[in-house]
Image (tube, rainbow, N blue to C red):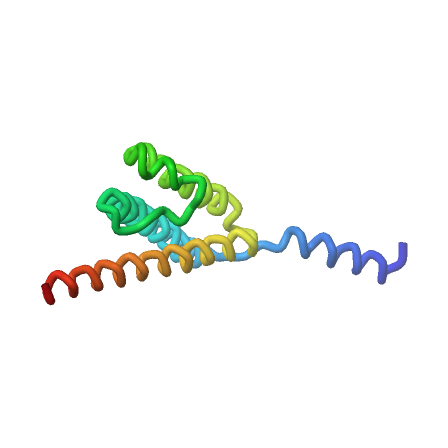
Length: 130
């Protein structure tokens, strides 16, 4: 093999084994994962409350039937799925794609949190006006 071929092979290998993060970064990332878990719990409880009171429907078609028929199972399922996903992402936290996944999950749950708070604000506003 030539030196140029060796460099290309090494670059291709590095692209698949690229590692990221320092202990300080991982402390921040751990906080983000914990925030995802807390926001997931909040989402599960609020969704169950909205659906139980006939104010909303579950957006996830896989959990839609469970939330209406088995509230506790819905909460446990929703929390378990996210715990499994975040555990997998945390396990591979030194890889850029896993870090991207953690941030993506955070952004999605942050948006869901804002939706819940916005909806609650509208309901409170209607109660005050009534």
